[in-house]
Image (cartoon, rainbow, N blue to C red; front, top):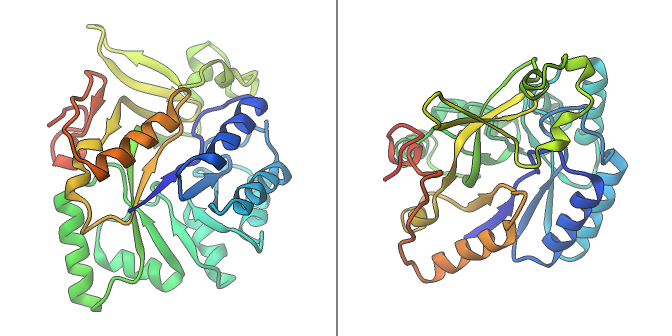
Length: 290
């Protein structure tokens, strides 16, 4: 089993990002995803800065993947996308079908990101034919669904020649919108947001009237209110999953990574907190736990 660190979903200051990847270079993570995938206004690190970080991580033996934007809204964002796809050195995680098109036209292998919703074997085959070499499972799919889908793929196409990656820890991305809900929560217009996301290094939680945390606002991204934690489910994934993804957190990311690695080596059931869940994986409501 390999372990990956997903792209940072939140808006952190440049020094925080650089410190994080200095730690990542010394961590046991095998694969590290880099880049801004949520909002193009988040420019603490620019394209050249990301490439510098990528080269530093590659120099210590990490596999580096550049993650593209999930929602493209302007020609300038398409131009940045083209630069990522044409980088000529690092693998790219396509989080939008336009990235798939560019990479496929260039004959470049790619990772199919979680936001590209794939639910059946024929869609997987289409992407595989376009150059996909790794598939990141959509957030809401259960173990049973994945088992059925991969079995169907094997029956139809006689082999499974791509890797499968599971988002195993972090607030699951549920939706993206042209509107910025973090700005709206501060009564700001999106065009006059003053980059207020930087004030919420783990996103801004929203609650129901009875005090239950329902969602996390992260700019134009809406995340699940509870944190997905599949640490107790590693015993069930060896025959399905090649890579376990940990989504970077504002605190304790590398402790979480170490806990997952230790759990794989010596499984001991760990109680989930009230703010953690594994519901989707067990084919029940995402906000509930088994």
